[in-house]
Image 1 (spheres, one colour):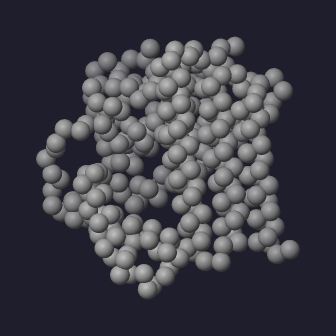
Image 2: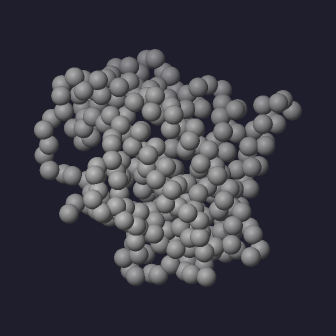
Length: 99
Length: 181
């Protein structure tokens, strides 16, 4: 295993941990707002780490560029959709969960 | 009132020099995008040149020149990478913690940014930063859902707003009632 492969494995595993934590948050968190926090933030970092891990293996700059582009599009979509879902929940009068 | 504070009334065209500069910059960005998508295929230029041209024209028509410097972006990227990593780590810790440490609350953050793109950008940005989720882009403020309402988010949001203002090269407009509910 080359150092590049080791780095890729490490980044992919770390990304997987964030996806796992995001999913646990989606299941455990009490309301729509807190679940959106878990989805947007943990998945953004999880995908970012996976993209970084795969970019290490890319044969050319354009492939690495495509990976980064995918990440940016998911960031934009994730943040916008989280906002829209939260705004819709608020308009329907869903009160945020309180301890 | 306009949706998301975006002003859709016709505005005077930006000075020619600024349109030219921003057109050139955007054409360069679209060319880079084409190069990435076409896998650097050099023989694709008969398609690429008109497409980049049309994309630049459409972009200038839809979005007037934005004062967004490359230096500003270069300074913003490390901040964003680091803080969004912190955001993911924070929410992952809370999700995996046995006692589920959450004490959410809603918070109205009064705008200092001018309406338009900077506000939309900040609303999307804070959803990726630790503990904040934008819930409504209002005309007077940004309604933020916070994972941990006991922390002082006012200072943190002010710092983020400062970064966004620097990125877009805008200054805060004078808000006479800058009070927090």
